[in-house]
Image 1 (cartoon, rainbow, N blue to C red):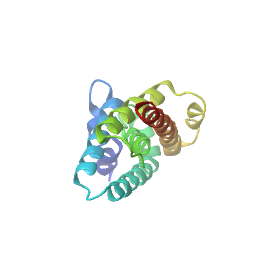
Image 2 (image 1 turned 90 degrees about the vertical axis):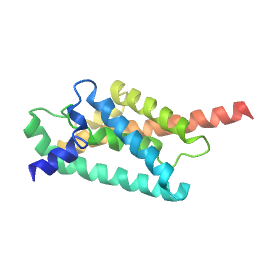
Image 3 (image 1 turned 90 degrees about the horizontal axis):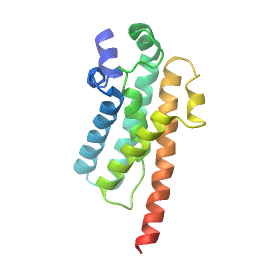
Image 4 (image 1 turned 180 degrees about the vertical axis):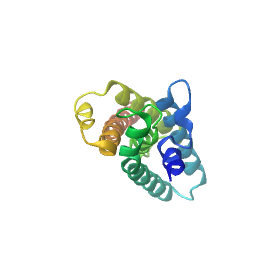
Length: 161
């Protein structure tokens, strides 16, 4: 059971990257996003799959939360990247109206920015217990990235018209 928890928590061991494991976990999520966009028969199907992946990442965060704190010896360990995957999926969820690569890259940059800087109210979510605190700060960063990305695409569309 611990092997499965470690596999989930570390995003199939990508969390063991020696440099920037959170960024590596986000890159994994971006790769999954791109694969889904490419393989899905339509935008609607792709978005349903991304929403399901976000729900699974949230459930995975909560499931491995207390275990990962005990196992890795700290709150929100760097090796745990399933929270970054959740945040990225939320950042790009239900966004259309632009090329897939623009959404993928802008979602990545904005999510990482909000995840690293943690502006108000994102920082407050870290206080939640165990897996909830680890997951919800990244969920909130994903929501903020999603909103800013939508506003950016709206302005870009208005300026290029």
